[in-house]
Length: 125
Image (cartoon, rainbow, N blue to C red; front, side, top):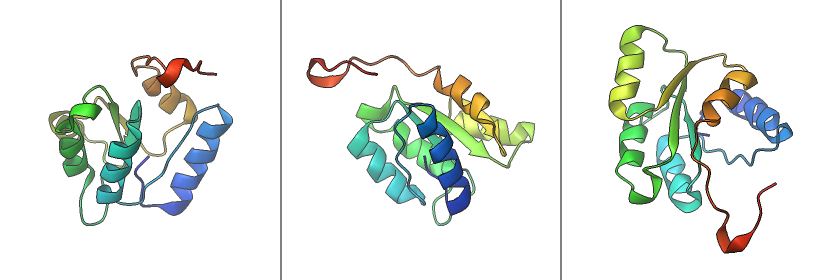
């Protein structure tokens, strides 16, 4: 998750972890891109209104990463106009959720992520 609002990030992180998800959080675009490269997540939830580097630029950067092409990118934002949704899709987001998003809404979008085979023959919980 890339979210600059510390309270919002912590709340959603805790809710998703209670649902059994592993969640890593970055609070700005460059750190989010760095973490995504390191972790190759199945899903990236990304705020659009980030400082220094907005979520549109983050999505474009992530889409250029070969190891992240199958990652489901979700815009999690207060920008909800049709124009905002169009811009998100053009930047490479797969889904657009308007804040405040429900855990159920996030779960539904996360369910679109392709299933991956765990490394080294491990079984996922």
